[in-house]
Image (cartoon, rainbow, N blue to C red; front, side):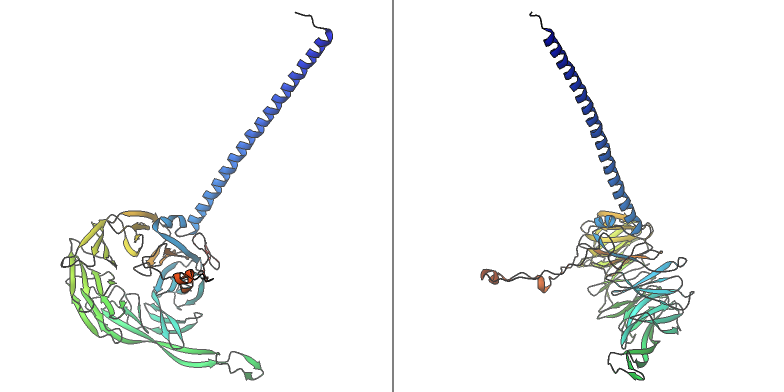
Length: 486
């Protein structure tokens, strides 16, 4: 081995020292980088956790703000149209709602009536029945001369409000004390009382005077034909009919047939809607206390005689009667090929609306779903159980429960129609929510602007275009303009 010179030794020593120093610096740098990377991972994890917490908070707020949150109603095949809050004093709970065709009215315990626009949820006006003690049964919209009027039916009077602004038109004391909500039939409000009477109330306009709308000079008024009008009105008892027992469920107006009522005296009666004359009466040996359901000219009525009756509206004769071992007090829902009824001790049952020669009815299926069916959509039946505040989706082939959701704050739930009905939910703090089926049973006709270009036009190579239908803003996830949430 050759001896190394002092110069080589010094060079080697310096090189070694430089390598060691470089290694130490590199290690330190890597250690620092590793620390930074670790910090970055921690920060990224913290950001992800914060985002998740924010999302959870938003979901919790949606659940708290909405009576029925969007994520809870989607599995039910429903979507949120709007939610609003009715202005009211903190001490006065909203206690009732009335759905009259497309009209929505709500009222509080102090007699303040609120009209809500059905397509947006905007509060149109509020009016007082002038009494904090009277019980309100319903609010019905009636035609009355120049414009319609909203008539509140209370246990003491009828109170009419102007359609446009809620101005008080009239307050008339009643001779008969109502026991039911009123049904709209043309220009009449029809209700039942506790003594078996069925009463027709009519709103009559009087004292119509023109009001000048514009003043152009001192002492001179514009003769514009569009000037306003002032009027007064009276709500008078027009007709009356008698039924055995008490009428405790709202009368039903059936277009083309008349007014249908049921009573605790075991009578099902059909009256002429224009003059109250009885057309036919069907008698049973036990009370009827639930509202009938109408489908294709047949009235389905459940009674305490332990039977579900299918009554032909044209003749008043029974088509079939299903008998069981318990009294029936829940309202049926008839739509399409089935009539559905919640039967004690058996559950939700579906019967065929066309059982053929089976005079005892034809059971299609039984379900464990609770509550009463309120409407039917393409996805199935929507049921509402008032006791547990539970809404369910029940498929119609075998009665299986597809989805359920609880809405604890919903105090009042109803649907506007038996098929594809708009579902209204009311909370006593003033929140009102409107739900709509995502998919409808009835096929919708495409508007003219959205129709397909004919093949002949395409073959001719014509430069033809069609306008797409207007799309309204989505309201499923949050209330839109003019709407509010608590």
